[in-house]
Length: 142
Image 1: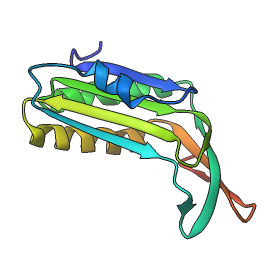
Image 2 (image 1 turned 180 degrees about the vertical axis):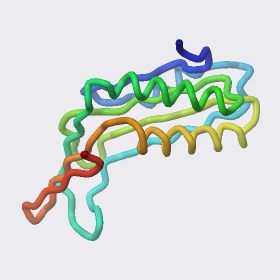
Image 3 (image 1 turned 135 degrees about the vertical axis):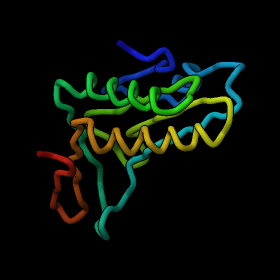
Image 4 (image 1 turned 180 degrees about the horizontal axis):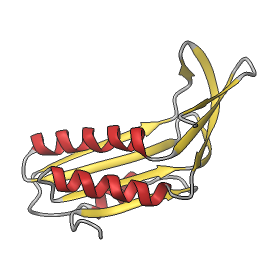
């Protein structure tokens, strides 16, 4: 069962929209909103990156929903949203967007950090990086 503060959870192959995440959290009772946007960068570990591909296990959406529920239970948030992209991404594309709202900023900062950190640690989404030198690397794959 989903916690009532969880407003948006998704894994999608279409471009992510910060506007959609913010709209899902519109709430006049929330004084603090913290947003984290993860973008594809052009380097990693000193190597140039040309792009990447994200793959998700079939259970990833359920795991993401579970992470969202647990963070909502742990923190006094009014709203919470998390979406992750899969498929082929180019440099600058949005890979993940998470946000929380609460009555006060401190709670939103703490909850948003917990949300992105737990998502990265527990949701089975794997990154396949493609480097300028022709090499590649899987990150987070079992």
